[in-house]
Image (cartoon, rainbow, N blue to C red; front, side, top):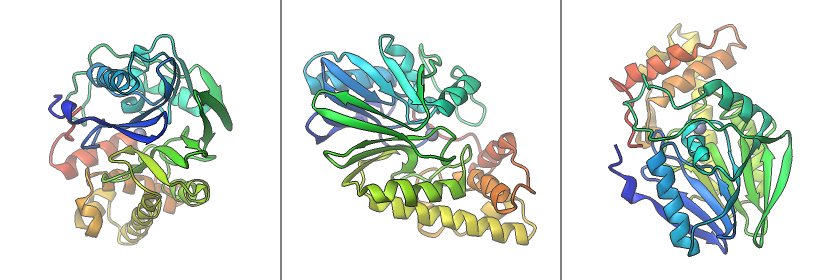
Length: 306
Ligand SMILES: [Zn+2]
């Protein structure tokens, strides 16, 4: 279950600004960030399981020289791989967008998984964000100012926020971007994601981009992701015209260069969302069906190394 636990690593992006990367970045293996000093730390997301969150704690301690005092956690969105570890920082204020809190409460504690192989969660539970905002806030950690901004519309989820550190041009995007993995908008919006990437992320001119999953990237990942999402839109239109179900359309699709990205079965989850959008709601959205179709396309429960 933790075969790749030892493969995690920390990247110094700028003084007092670090990314915690969990290879291979596939299902449930997210990235986190930590900013500031051991005496005054802001954490950007946690991890899915107790073991992985303890790995994040150990990485922070090793990097900063002593066990950190995490005053604040920013949750980029509600998905459990980014948030279940919140509960292991009982003294931290958990900050997020208003919709993220609502989505976290609706999802609740770590579930018994049916679409994925089971994960050993350890002792984690849902701790929903308790300091919420609507547009943006600023946090100070040591010498660093973090601008925490809602992206303005549904994209990966309804409650996505980004963390922008202007003095170092470092951007933490949460799951608006996956690096080396297939984008996933089942709980968000294809069109909304494209709009956010083009009008919110790209204009920042980030020098360094930390996606929600996968190695540290550059801003080129934004264009790459837009191309995939436009591919999803085209495939949705073609599939609808041809009278294909999302699963049939995914089954027949040539993913081209996107086939090498991790978790390619996400195409059918994305198509469920795409069909709903390009039909302007005439085709309903059924999350249970979308998840079942991903399992079908994958030929069995989805793989996770969490
Ligand atoms: Zn996510």
